[in-house]
Image (cartoon, rainbow, N blue to C red; front, side, top):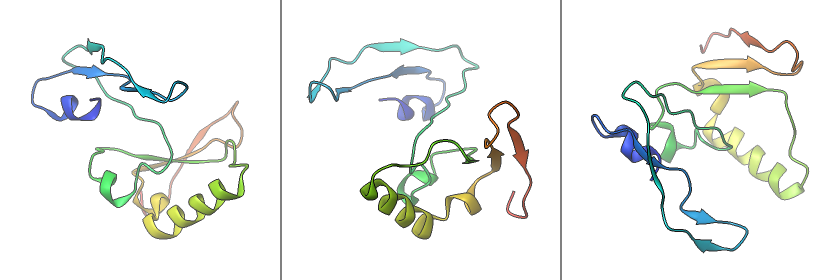
Length: 110
């Protein structure tokens, strides 16, 4: 409901939410429209898993920021890093360890 419309030729209609986590229920989709030159930016963990990686024209690996606090999340992060190698597949690497001065890192894979 978010990505597929942007991937369709000429369509920029999209839905921001199809599920309410707090109420654990589906919600009635509210379609919105963006301009013809719109760019879709998706932020989230695990977006370079093999089944999703082909969706993106550009991906950024962020170094720094908040770390996962639970052991389950940490295990999931470690598995993702091992299996998907998202840093190596990223188009760009952003060093965010100093939020006042984020900077792009350049590596052989970029």
